Length: 178
Image (cartoon, rainbow, N blue to C red):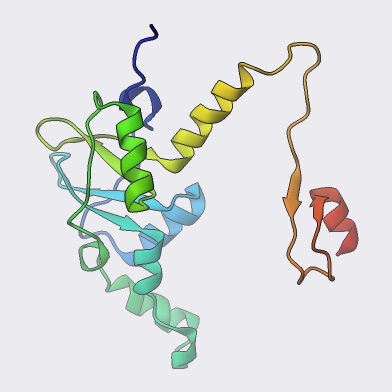
C-alpha cells in the first residue's frame, strides 16, 4: 500500500503574504506580477488573520466611470487597506491533513485555496487548485509512453468573438488570424 498523500506534499511554501495595513495598490501589483489570485494576511508573528483574493481587490476598486483620473483613483486606492477587504472567516488545513480531504473541501465549497497553518495558526503554506492540477499532471505523466518526448499542448479554445472562430486553434494560428 502506498503512503498517503498529505497536504505538505502538494502545498506551496514559502508563501507571499501581506499585513492587514498593506494597501490595495500594493496587493494589486503583487497579484499581477506573480499571477496570484489569493494572498494570506498575517500578523507580524506569522499568525494567519485573513485572506485577500483577486475578487476582493476588484470589489475595492473605484470605477473609472467616476470621472477621476488614473492618478486620482490610484491616490484614493492608497487609502484602502487590506484589512478593509480581506475575508477573516476562512477555512484552513494542516500540513499533515490528507490531501484528498483538502481537495474535497476545495470542491465542495468552491474555494480556490486553503491556507495551511500549524497548531498555533502560524501560516506554513498555501494549497491551491493549481497545486492539485500540478500533482494531477505529474501523476498522469507517469503513464505516458517513454518513447519520444512529446510537445506540450499549445491549444486554446477561442471564443466566437475572435474573427468568428469557435474551434480550437494553436496560439500561432490565432496570432495569424489577428
